[in-house]
Each structure stands twice: as C-alpha cells, then as structure tokens.
Length: 261
Image (tube, rainbow, N blue to C red; front, top):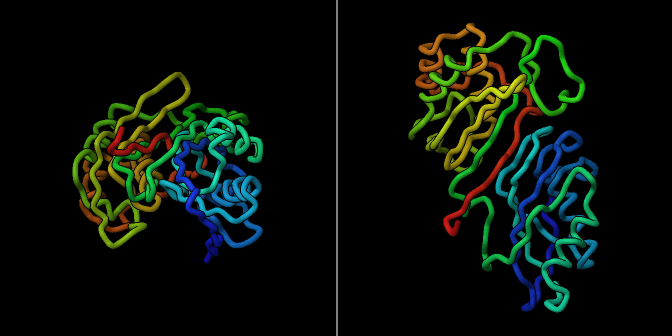
C-alpha cells in the first residue's frame, strides 16, 4: 500500500483545484504506488514539494488505470503560496516542474475542504477504437485497433440500455462501499472517419466499468453478441457475464463536473 506524504499546513495555507491532462502510457495509473513505481499522483506531489520544500498530498477525482489517459482529471491540494506571487505564477511554476506528459491546464482557488472525488457529481469518459484493417503505429498507445468494421447502429441500440439507474455489477467492482448501482446520463457511439468513439457520462463509475462495457459493446458491433445478449449480461449482475476488457490505452477521462458549475 502506498504511503501518504506527511503534509505541513499553516494558517496561511490555501486549497487549490486544478484540471490536469496526461498521457498515461508511462504510468501505473493515477494513484500513487509503492516507491519507484511511476504514477501521475506521485509526479504531481513531487512537483508541488519542489515548490514548497515539504511533502504535499494531492487528491484526485478518479483513479485511472495503468495506461489510461486524461483530458480533464481534477485534483485538489493545500499549500502555502505567497499571495503576492499570484495564481498565475503558481500555475507556471507547477507546469515547469512536471514532466512533458503531464500538464495542469487550469488552476483556481477552492473552498477549504474541497474533495475532487467525493464532491464530484458527474464524470465523463471517452473510448477510442481505430476501426481499420491495418494497424497504425501512431495510435498504438491511443486507441484500440479493431480490424473488422463495427456496426454503430447495433452498438448504439445496446448502449441505450445503459442509460438510467442500474446495478452495473456485471461490468465492474465498487471503489468505495459496496453498492454497484450507478446512474448513467448518456452513452453513445459516433464515427469520425477511421475512429469510432464511445462517450459515456454518469454520476460515478465502478472499477474498470467503462472498459468492460466497451469490450461487451464491441462484441455487439462485431456480431458476436446480439442486443439481447448484452441486455442479459447487464441484468445478470455478475462479472463472469461481461466480455473481455477493452485495452486501457483507448480510454480517456474527459471531464469531472461539480455542483457549483
């Protein structure tokens, strides 16, 4: 289990909220791992520690898996930063201390006690499938290469069954508590040339839920499952009824939304 850094907070410390983008190829997920194992959280904490000369704990909105990317991960942290230096200076300094595959795209002051994970109300993910006969090396860490052309109409009809409040135990395990019930607000596929993209928004996700859903919907798109097969899998509420996980490198955490937005 990863150890939490020992933070030092003074009465002048302020809480900040940041939106982070990262290429997850070289990391074992967002969450801090044992010493020497690269993670996005560890890099963010290291960058902040360089700025304030003591350990800083970073909280994230989602624990993305090894190889998963993010366009809109949200983090929170509390540090003492001289007001005279300003928010823009903190933003520039933080990015200057981060590796090239991680960047803070937005930075703002947050209320004390802000928690990016537990305060979140909606999360959106996208999954990219490169749907062409011959692989393309540029996309090898960015999208799942599927050779046979998939049927988007069938996939969208099956994906519509996900919308609403359901027990998604077939497609994942809970990260907090025991409930496997989530509310999905939208779930659709679209095609843009060679790329097929799945977009899903929900109030929360189970561990590996999106990748399990994509793997199962791909079976529908390739004609190996019927829409009824997918419906039966969802209703079964057992992991053994899910298809094989879609690869991590096609998945992107797109955005996290909060009540004050």
